[in-house]
Length: 178
Image (tube, rainbow, N blue to C red; front, top):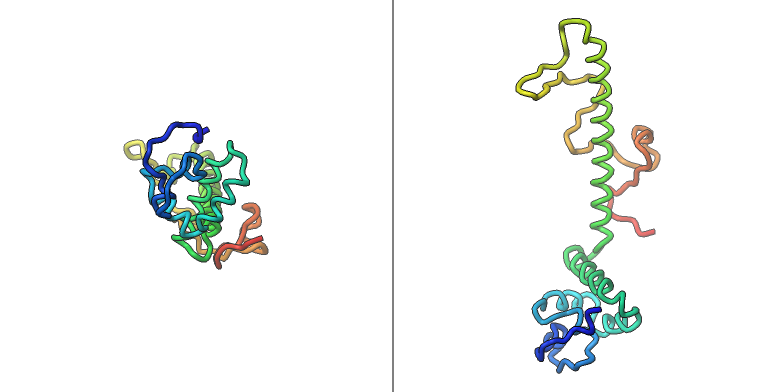
């Protein structure tokens, strides 16, 4: 795909960094252009030019661009977090997803409770909500935990409190490699 594009006489970012002459059949040239020198520098620092060359040689040509993008992403993550790399970012996103699912469950419970209280109190003149300028201000519900975006529960596979919210993974101590 990119390998058939004509390129200028300047060296690719890989050959510039490695201080060698860029040949017309350079395996790095289609994917590490000279205007992105840091992309190859990061990949080279984490994986090494020889290993990247071997990886690209083994991958079919139509998948090489995706491979280079994956290597660049992993290198960036590994430089930011040398211990966990991408797994740390994945664990962080999974933990955030669990928190958001928990917040959504609380919001749904509050909405159901609000709907139940407004339907039962619709016949009476007193209501538990105040409508001001299209905004509804609700009185706090004593039986529903506060939804502040931060979880105070201890998550674990055996957590009986959260079993009703679906499967929960414990990512409090760092990512697990399975």
